[in-house]
Image 1 (cartoon, one colour):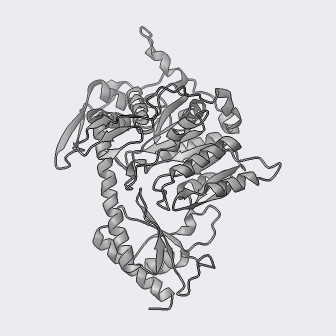
Image 2: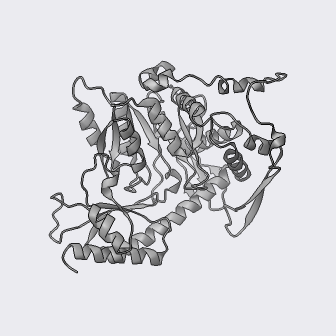
Image 3: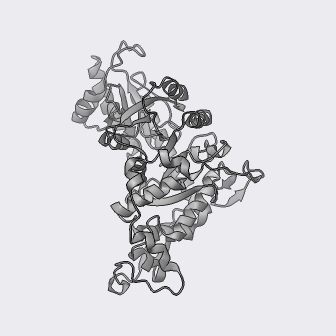
Length: 468
């Protein structure tokens, strides 16, 4: 059984019931930041981007009685697809399968050009999901848009908010996929320390309170708060609240990249997201949240969605309209058929099962770490996601904090030559400094493979330490 922070309980059977109290059940007036607040945050590119002369008029086609000569949409009659069907496992009984079919209007919508932000029914379902998972309701000044995975949306958000040469705040170590985004804009990436409890808010405060006079202040802070890639850490509620307070004090936006939200398997209740916690702020609208279905439905399906202040989401949609028009209508139609068939209760039951799957994988990997690298490495136990971040004790005379060495050559060359492939920690450090840390994924390997991989790594490490 799992309890969601909004007061929803999902049992193993997939039944969803409200708990007795909900901290947002008493109607509270939510004040959102005004639209013109975001003008100073938008990049120069976002400010000059104009609506598509065609896509901007798509909504007008919905007026009853209108005959549209607007868009160059291909005629459905020429499409060879007449129906699609696929089988899925039951979220409450994996041994059972059920079939879902797409035909008629639902298939037609999936085969045709569609709205830039996404199919209306799927958008509505996702908005309902954000209400259940984060307590956020429509009418609070936020909106939602779909993309080809959350990476697509993060890139567009960065383009909408960051000018070339800007300073940006990033947790460190940071997801390697965003480093090239900021580098391509020649950004100064200001590294904010992290530890087992997430981003170190005292480090963030120190940097901001000592910001050079006359230097433009950073507009965004990027973070992965649950099961962070690469560290596996999950930020505590206290740290999150402090970051939100700093965002208000120093006027920056939070890019909450959260692909592992539903892969939380810690013993304690899941901490609320930044998107939810800002409801307790005087005003909402400083969080742009990125969700992904890659880890819970399919990586290849490339389904992600962004939630945040409407002016920022509108800027993302303007970018989409000129870059790739929309995310795939067919993928949206397939996703819609699945989630409407399941409903929220079965969706949560599925994600609970996925989280439990990775918890077992985590336990297998940590057991192997204890067997093969005890005394040779140090690590914290992740409570979400699919990664271990461990420090190799490269010297037998290890002194914490004193020239701990660099894992890069050992991991890239020596470990690989001995048949094990992992990532040296330096690739997750925006400014490329040395580190003795290593990132290892536990998502795919069997127990036998994990033990063999860590045994091989142990052999290499002992040789490096002169103990082989």
